[in-house]
Length: 154
Image (tube, rainbow, N blue to C red; front, side, top):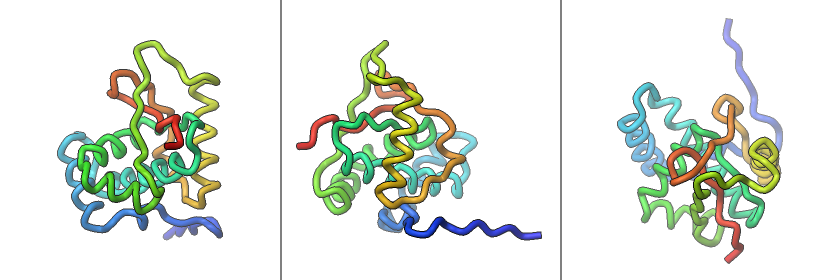
């Protein structure tokens, strides 16, 4: 028996925001750097990172946070600075900065609220949320496990 899940009406698969060559490059880097993540999952991570970045750019100052897996995609994308800057300019209209929290610093209203706010922002922006990749919000300090978007609109 085959089960086909349809995308909700009015949403866009965020992987379509990323140039296919860039998607290939990022997925290869993720699978090389992250043991246990296969190419299919890496591509899903790239798509959700794109949705996170796009939603963050539309919601400056909202302290949106990626999940642990999506954070891998965001960090990988940032390392490809030319591709990342071009993506931000094309999709958001400006650079979306990466702002890690300091050791012990918390999101003002808590990680769970930020996690829910992030998923709502992605959906409101019109992108599909891949729920399997959003299990828990990343706990970021020193840029190692999860971060938030730039709190400034400029």
